[in-house]
Amino acid sequence: MFNQIYQPLLDQIGNTDLHPWLDDIARGIQDNLYASNNGHLPGWINSFERMPQALPSCLHYDQEAITIGHPNDLPEDQRHVLKECLGSLRPWRKGPWNYFGVELDTEWRSNLKWDRLKNAISPLQDRLVLDIGSGNGYYAYRMAGERTKLALGIDPYLLYVVQSLFAHRYLPESVPSWVIPFSIEQLPEAIPAFNSVFSMGVLYHRRSPLDHLFEIRSLLAPEGELILETLVVNGSEGYSLLPKGRYAKMRNTWFIPSCLTLEAWLKRCGYRGINLVDVSSTTFEEQRSTEWMHFDSLRTFLDPKDPTKTIEGYPAPKRAIFVASR
Image 1: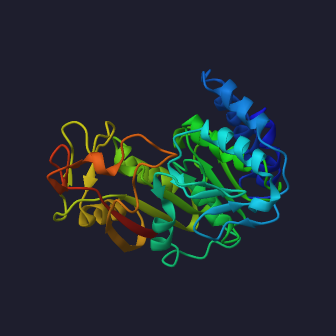
Image 2 (image 1 turned 60 degrees about the vertical axis):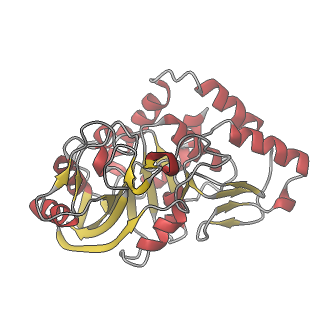
C-alpha cells in the first residue's frame, strides 16, 4: 500500500544527483516499510483507506501551519471522519498542520524553530536537501515553501513516516517533500549529493557525535551547507555534559556540549564558515502536551520547584543552531 505512494518520489530522484543510488533507495523503502512487522501498520493502513476523498482548493507550505485544503472543501461529517483517521496516528510531535480545517496542535510549535533559522541559511530554492530525523516531515514541507528541488526526510520511526504519507493522500505528485523510513546508517554510503543537510534534535542522541558530523560531511556536495540544531549547555571550550542516566526524562541522551565545544567539534570534522545563529531556551509556548500529543512534555521534564533545571537536576533544555559549510 504505502510503498506505491513513493513512485513520484522515485521519479523525482531520477532527475537529481541522487539518481545513481535510485535502486538502493527504492529497495530500502520497500524493506524498511514492512520488514519491522510493526503491529500498528494494518490499523494505519485502514485509517489511510478511510480518509475522505477530497480535492484541496488551497495548499500552503510557507505558513505557520502546513495547510491542506479549506474547511469548505469537505462536509462536516467527513471532517469528523478525517479527524478520527488523523487521531489514530497520535502522538503528533512536529507541526502545526491543518487538514481541511482540522487543526493539529502538535507537541512542538516547530514554526518557531523554523523562524529562528530560515533567514540564516542559504536560500533553498532548487537545492537538494536532506533532513535527518525528519519526523513527520513538517520541515520538509516548509522547505517546499522555499521551492526546493527535493526535500528528502529520513526517519527510522515508522509512525512518523506514515504521518508524512497521510499528507500525500491529498497532495499533487509534484510536491518535492518526502519522508522515507531510513536511519542515516541505512543510506547508501558516501552520497556527496546534498546541497543542504539539516540535523535538528539528533546530535545528542548519538553515542559518537563526531562520527555523526563526519557522516553528514560525506553526504554534502562541494560547498554544501550543514544546518545543525542541538541541545547545548553553558561552559568553556572542551566542556560537555554527559548525563549519568536520563536527561529531561529522555533515555538516549549522550553528549550535550557547550557552544564553544561544538564549534571545536565542527572545525575538527573539517567544516568551514562556522556560524552560531541562535541560542534559545525551550519554553512552554514551544513544547507542551496537547490533544494531539497527550503524553509527558516539557512541563513534566523540569523540576517543579526550579524550572531552570530538569527533573534530574541538570540545566534545563537550551538549543543552539549552527550553520557551516563543507
